[in-house]
Length: 337
Picture 1 (tube, rainbow, N blue to C red):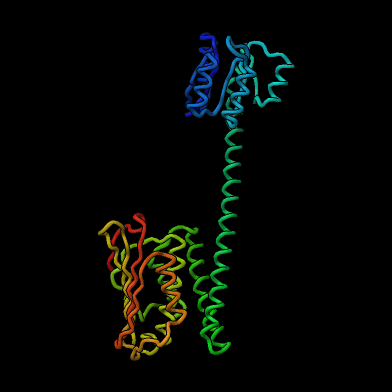
Picture 2: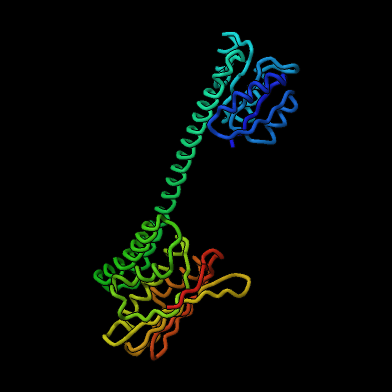
C-alpha cells in the first residue's frame, strides 16, 4: 500500500487529484489534511512514501510545508501540486529539497510524476540498505578475524607450554588450528547461520576417522547451534577425538567410542546433555597434571558457553558428560538414531 500525504485545502481539487491517482499501477491510500496543525500531526504519527502539497494555503504556505517535510520525513519525495508556481518559486523549491511540481491544469502527468518519484526514493532506500548491510558485514568480519587471531595466539602460547619437542608442538598446533578451520568451513557452507550439532561432530571427527566406523552414534536430538557455540563445540570434539586417538579407545584396533546427546526440555531453560563414552582401549589412568586439552574443553564449555563439563578417567574407558544451555529455538525436535 502506497501511503500518500495530501496537503490540500480545496475539496474539489483534492477530489481531482485523487481521481488522477487512480491511474497508478499500485494500490494507494491518501491521508488528506488542510491545516498546518493537521499536517504536522500526520507527519508525527505516520510514515508516508510521498507528500503532495498545494503551494498556497490559508494558514501557511507550501515552502513552510516543504521545510517541515524535510525535517520530519526526509526520505519521502515532496511534489508541489499547484495552480500557479512561478519560475523563481520552483527554483527555490528544488533548492530546498522538492522533488517535482505538477500544475493543476495538467494533472494528467501526476501519476507519472508520483511513480517516478516513489521509484527513485525506493532505489535510494535500497542502496542505503545495501551500504548499511555491507558496513555491518565488514565490521562483523573484522570482529571475527580479531577474535580468531586471539584464539590462534592463545593456542600457540598454551600448546607450546606442554610440548617436549618442536615436532610435538607442530603436530598439536596444526591439529587445533585445523579444527578451528574445519568449524569455520562448516559455518561458511551454511552462510554463517545456525549449524546442526551432528554436522559439527562429523566435521570434527573426519580427520581422524573418515567413515565414522569406530563411533557408535546413539540418540541424537536435532540441535541447531549459533556460530559462536558451533566453533566452541567443534574445538571440544577435536580435543576429545585427539585424546582418544593417542591414549584412549581409538589408540588400538578394538576400541570404540559411543556418543549421544539428548535435549532436556524440563526446568526454566533448555539444555543438551552430550555423553562421550570410550571402551575397549588401553587401561585409562588419570593424568598427574591437567593438560591444556582438558583446560581447553572446560574453558569452552564452562566459560565460553556457560555449561558444565565432567571428565571421568575410569579404568575401563574415558567418559565425558557435557551439559550445554541452548536457546529455545535451537531445540527443534528429537530424532533417535
